[in-house]
Image: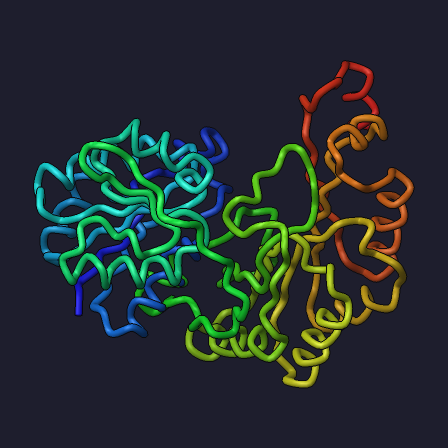
Length: 368
């Protein structure tokens, strides 16, 4: 058994949102929670610290890590927080020189070698989905294997050089994963909330019911979960919601799937399960406008508690949408928003200014 400390680097609301800090999101890091759950299931001792949500500084994080006396420290980072994670890793390495530091998340997945080249304090990087990789890596490190060549999905240092183990296949059966370890999160759910425009009532949190996106949009990096969509079963999703409502008194969930509406029959089964269970829970999701075909499914979603659908509209100019390989038309945008309104559900649009060939006139098209 190994002791594993999982954390993010402090990255406060003011740093992320500036003047809009008071309405920004403080949501649990689902990556850390899932890794914590699989490591605990494998018999390891786990501590999860959400430094950003707790408002801790790096000195306080380091103190808590030392108190826990871990065998391994795992950090996660998106690109805006990568430098902060590197500074924290450097301080951990100075205070606990013999403890391996593992970095996971979207940033190291996108550029694994560059990340470890730039930041010497990271000993290992987990590339792609981390649940199986971190479990095998922890076991390898606990057994004294410094160069885990037999663990797929790892970038590591060997003899002063960087090496990459073979890539790891995506997890096919998502239902084999335990629920995220929300119980290991200090202050959950009271300390957490989505951004002000993404929740209707509190407590509210987010969940992921599918991984992957088949879209080809030029502005999106799908290197973590890939382009092949894998789904949790409706039964698993309903069980996760039941767990949240029963044990944490959750009143609302946000589905963070890239395309929740992709599989209509599955959406309908989830809705019917929520209705049958008489769960008084509100929820929202994201979807593509070309997945909206008629009023039927939207009305069922409304009955099941859906109050908001987030659509990736991106631009009001068809030429820009085509160049960006968005795969939608402006007519589909209008139809989806109109039908959503008729079903009694709010629409929210995501937009991008500055895509290739953007002009003042195309921005006016989007604003209009």
